[in-house]
Image 1 (cartoon, rainbow, N blue to C red):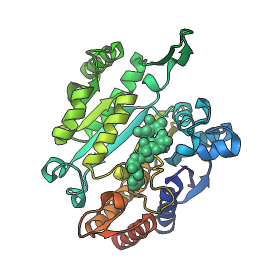
Image 2 (cartoon, helix red, strand yellow):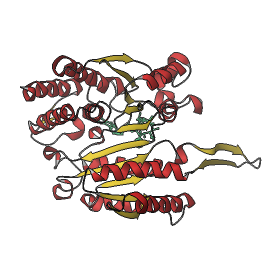
Image 3 (cartoon, rainbow, N blue to C red):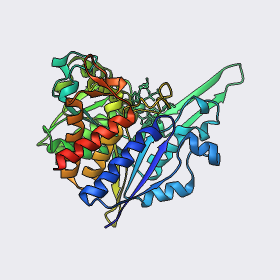
Image 4 (cartoon, rainbow, N blue to C red):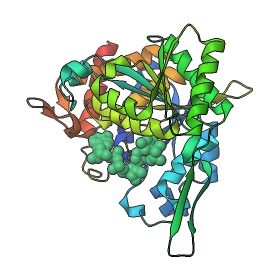
Amino acid sequence: MTRNILIVAGDGIGPEVMGEVERVIGWFNDNRKFDAKIENELVGGCCYDAHGVAVTDETVEKAKRADAVMLGAVGGPKWDNVPYEGRPEAGLLRLRKDLELFANLRPALCFAALADASSLKREIVEGLDIMIVRELTGGVYFGEPKEITDLGNGERRGVDTQVYTTSEIRRIAEVAFDLAKKRDNRVMSVEKRNVMKSGVLWYEEVKTLHGEKFSDVKLEHMLADNCAMQLVRNPKQFDVIVTDNLFGDVLSDIASMLTGSLGMLPSASLGAKDASGKACAMYEPVHGSAPDIAGTGAANPIASILSFAMALRYTFELGADADLLEKAVDKVLADGLRTGDIMQPGMKKVGTKEMGDAILAALAKLNG
Ligand code: NAD
Ligand code: IPM
Ligand code: MN
């Protein structure tokens, strides 16, 4: 059975880190009978330059048909002045929306070797294993109206709209409860019901669903600002965090630093199954195009490589292969190899490609 993977490397460090992912996929083809066929397409600023839009209709259709999409990163200062609809990020948002990728899983895991690489003390982050479940196709990212209007008196008004419906909240909470059951069985639902109506609805719907179907899972609620603070104070109190699109974006960047670097955090963006049982899926590192280091060969490819491990686990249901890849990353870190973002005294500093080489070598060794 051939598996179809669409790679959209994007901009900045996207192509650099995705080059390493392609090599890892090649290794699984050659050594684990993975049988993946890779296609490449443009999304983001590179697509705007070529076609005047951040993603083409053809690429959206191809992404829908693919078994999995692997995305690098989009955006950068080169496109700061393009029209809002054409900006690189619009391509990524359209892919998420058109593929109905409502569930964004962002695991923050502290590898043992990196317990001293975090900006927090070792004892705060050592052994950390939390899962942020971010709603990805609703909320203020997509709510209407979304506009800037001229008030005619020298003032302008910018409006974004936070909207959630019962079904949107229930389906993301369901994903969180299901994941918790396979973990430490605890869900923290995060909103700001003290100031937002959508937060009140979020709180009520999660509570209702819990009572109906998941009363065996421990559910707690926390206001988003407190959650941001608690993530830095005592992150190991959390198991699964479920939250909306914008809070999830911010809280996952905070969580990334608990693992050592934004360059370490992978994610899976998953859709609902259609009538035939097929669900769309896109795997993307949490970081962006890192314009400050793009083109230097210094980017950490681990977030993207671990995103491929998530594809192995969630789309291809190859848990043993996912474990193998995560173990290879663990081994390379334990051996002391570090890209600049996770560099520590006494460790060996390497670039993107050398990190990829080392992970391939570790895979070969672990595979026996
Ligand atoms: P960023 O994530 O690109 O970079 C933030 C900082 O983290 C930078 O100092 C960068 O060098 C560092 N960093 C990020 N990834 C790294 C890696 N793999 N290895 C080493 N260091 C890494 O965030 P930003 O600078 O705010 O955004 C830059 C552009 O990326 C913007 O256009 C933004 O919209 C876009 N962006 C895209 C995505 C995506 O495509 N999924 C995600 C976030 C930001
Ligand atoms: C992310 C990014 C995106 C988001 C941007 C680039 C649209 O920050 O994936 O975390 O805000 O969702
Ligand atoms: Mn983000």
